[in-house]
Length: 78
Image (cartoon, rainbow, N blue to C red; front, side, top):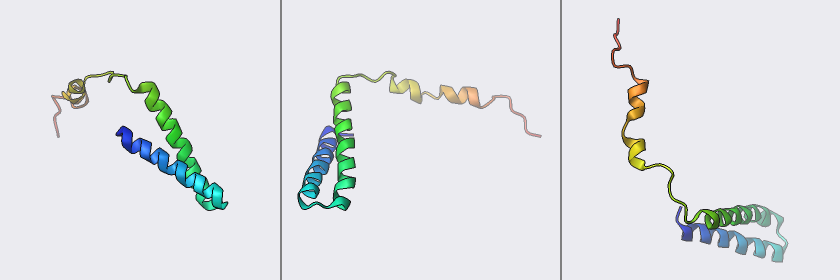
């Protein structure tokens, strides 16, 4: 997920939560408060892992070696 999209989802949840507190609207504040907390967790995780590299090469996953083990070559149908 792109960083700017995540950031603006986080910001949107925070602004609507702040507005819900100002007008004392429980039904507006709860879902946006949850979204703000989840957005905060997402930003923290992004800050922790922003320099990490993928653990496996994509070409290793796409070469089809799994199919060799799942489908027997000498299958005879009666």
